[in-house]
View 1: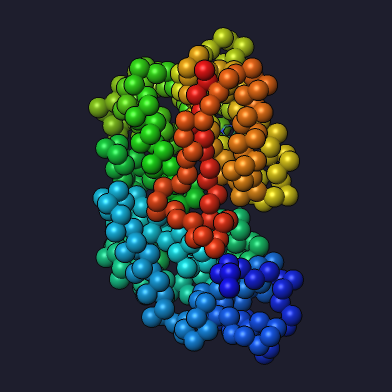
View 2 (view 1 turned 60 degrees about the vertical axis):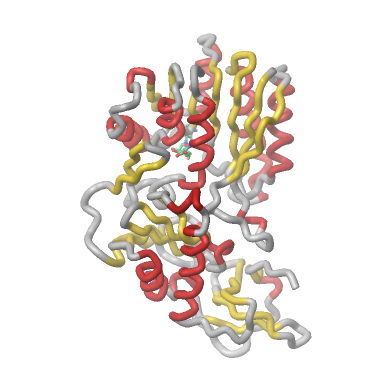
Length: 382
Ligand code: SAH
């Protein structure tokens, strides 16, 4: 049996009895075989999400304690994750908890509930997270767009512990970073790029760096720490750039004079840089999700092509392009084709040095390929 946890609207023949949003229902195949237990979501195309493939497992507080404890233990078992102050503890479907995200920042856990089932079991999840981590505070950031698809309103605020009155600061690879858990993107920070930020640090020595879509400067600061000669960072979000500047100030050991922040549209700014004859040794392209689903793939492909083409044109000979897509609707194969097309149009001979993914605290269950959303290529122009 395949163990994909989603049951789409079209595969549900009928609901016996009644169920409100988030209620646990038993899943039965048309041949009568009992398949498992799922959370019912009448407003979503994903009509049910399986909590368990064991049809006899009871979905109760004890169930969530077990699942959350297993997710936390899985991170603790990996030495590279054990010491992290910023860590994804629960990665939804891939941790057996569909629609549930929990990120830890120091003593604070930020919980994001993206499914009717998660919504229903909020209290159980909070209790389980507190027990598994010993953290002092749980803050809810259930304000992602996907909640609307589940028929849920946006919600955010403190669920346990003291109100958040100061920014949460974490250290990552020796760099201090402020995380805006109230208003930042996602739960405040892009934890999925943690390992790739370390790679940037390792590559930066003696290189000039252009960091496109820099958000609060995670890659930029690691590039400075790694010995970059110059780091130009671009983002169109004022608050993100303010955060980036504060992050730089939090790390007085870094050569701040080598950093420049540009509040601009990446597409326009890259063109302007090209016109001005600028060239870089390392360019990072980490754009937002251009294609949330396959339906947007065409338009997204053009946008990826555009920035990657500009990226190759702005590279010095021998330069490195680190390029990402976090779009669910664009798979690795398509992404690689787009990047290859961009290199071809730029007249660049380039090769892939590494394929990059999300950090290990963002696992992808083999039965759930959607979990593998982040793909990256480290390319070198010859
Ligand atoms: N690399 C970052 C995360 C990038 S998220 C990190 O490791 O933390 C994508 C960023 O792109 C967001 O900060 C968003 O504000 C910015 N953005 C989206 N569209 C943009 C555009 N057209 N031009 C510039 N920045 C853009």
